[in-house]
Length: 147
Length: 154
Image (cartoon, rainbow over all chains, first blue to last red; front, side, top):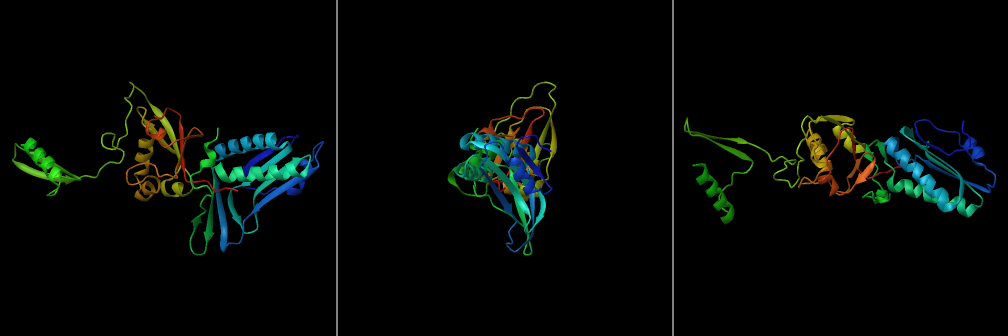
């Protein structure tokens, strides 16, 4: 149960996105944008995700604060899953609530890009032709230099 | 006797000829008139020949440091490694000592010169360190050091 606060979590379990959308509606909300990152069928059997949880959570909290300030958001949820996930499963769910769609879209986009840049989470593809760690989009992890 | 050998080695080094006494420790036993040698490898964590420095230990100093590797590095070296140290040690040297237990793990993290590879991210207590800092910062009791490859979440 949440009492009007953001849900920031790194967890194994999936989550009910419908319920999150309902709870993201605040006084003044005119738009809710949902980002749902999914395990794609890139010829893989499964995906294994791991996080440096304590640090990743702090990073997610900071991203949430920054996004809220930058884009006037009314509510944010970020749920990043770890452990073994199969094709079609949710990896990352970002719920953003704002007064108008430009802010909601921009806020959602900001959050996913910041996560890609610097939050210590890794994924490994379990493939039929051998396992493979997914290389980061930011090879030097420069995104994390802020702060 | 030893001085003459050292001089000869220095001259060989300067004229770039002959075979130098590299990765070998030459032993001379004058009492028994016996010469021998043992193979040694350069220690990448050596404070004398790798440009890194050790802090002088304080008396009676005991500390526990937790070193955590993630993703590929974790697979190669394990994680949540607790190290007991008598004194503060330079962060890079501590990590090298641990990584050396497995060549593949060491090579994944350090380059041929014993420096952290460019893409490796080093954190101390949740805060990222610049590569140069890892050579000067000494670890303290209760520190958590994290070593990981570029992130790939989302």
